[in-house]
Length: 381
Image 1 (cartoon, helix red, strand yellow):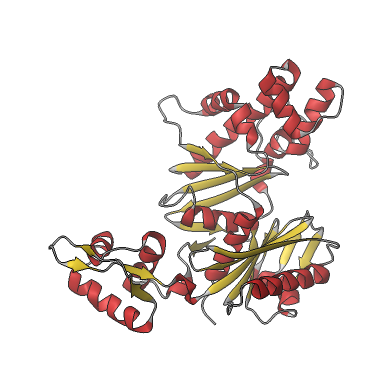
Image 2 (image 1 turned 180 degrees about the vertical axis):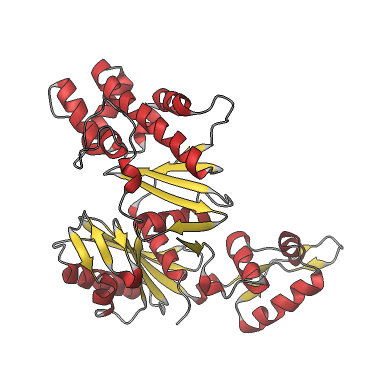
């Protein structure tokens, strides 16, 4: 199992220099005294690290001046986040979403395009064209192109399995490399989301973190000791087959009451439609439940209770400091809040405290920013 540093490798090798750059990237501008305090460095040690960075232009003094603790005026330091730029792309079953970002993953330009075909070479060509469009919108040199998608991504950017694209054993990084001169990185979309969420989102500063997504299926991301944990099976959705209800319906693989069949939007819609005697979509199911419809409420609460059980299982095995829940189906956690809490209590040891849970909503460009951050993890060529 590999552990990938969350800090961008483009900040340099691990050590005081990268620590300075990272702290300024995340929290800057900072005064020298504040920076030294955060890093546990003496003023002399900090000066030795920052002097060559100032000379090379990696960091700079801001125009603003303020009075430091000694009463002398000082100028805060900040990193030049625009020294390097990256493009991140999220591929779904229907669209390509792309963003051009700087080292801070600030979005400088964005674009999207529909997939007219899921044939791998056609998708590679579309990604390259979209990346070119971004460079035309914001002409800057691009240091890396990161792509994320739902599925298993193996070494070298080969996609072992991507169900929404109907791909198996596709050397997508090689295909894409044939359409662009930018260095290419391909990663699983949950890994990309976990990277951006831990680095800049609701998981910032949380050393041990679980990300759960619910929507078309169930996704899982894990950070332990500030490192993203993943292996060759990441992206296969194994957490989605966690059993949650012994009396529930069966999934496509015959698993009764697993997370996928209890929590996916499609299956919640199916359950509610059978109960109500007509076809209803996910948003309407939630609205009906909130309005007091007993049949919709039963369907929603059954799913909410299962979600609560999954949260407790994740807490027990990973022992995180925080769980972040997101995805297209995250509205379930709000509508079925009481059922989710009951499900969390069901399996939790009575002396154990509940792990903090935060529900967030993110768009596809946010995932694309995570793909760009994944590209930043690759060493400089």
